[in-house]
Amino acid sequence: LLHGTDDELIPVCDAYAFKQARSSIDVHIIEGARHAFRGKKQNKALLSTVSEWLGAKFQHIVLDEARSRSGHDGLELACSIKDITLQN
Image (cartoon, rainbow, N blue to C red; front, side, top):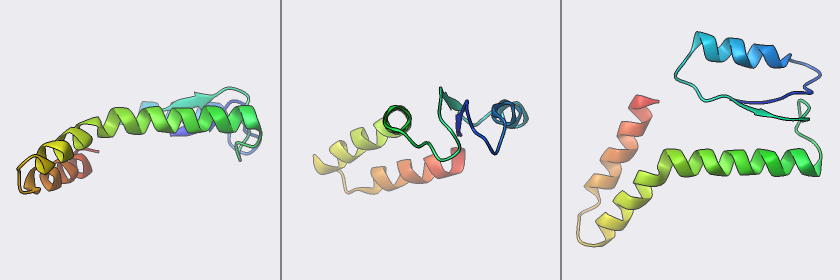
């Protein structure tokens, strides 16, 4: 969940309440961002946060894909993707 501190439509405290209700989600607060994340600084923070999150969540898929290219039949990669879907 991405939320801006200056969101004019939804208070930032709602993001924290959502996290409290569903502890399995990740909450990232972008300082100074409004509801639409307009502005260079906010967009840069948004892209950086999403990129870091994706890298952390899917790092093992890249490793599994590399293994499948080195001789495995690709089943390992498919199983990893299925596991992520079921876990999250």
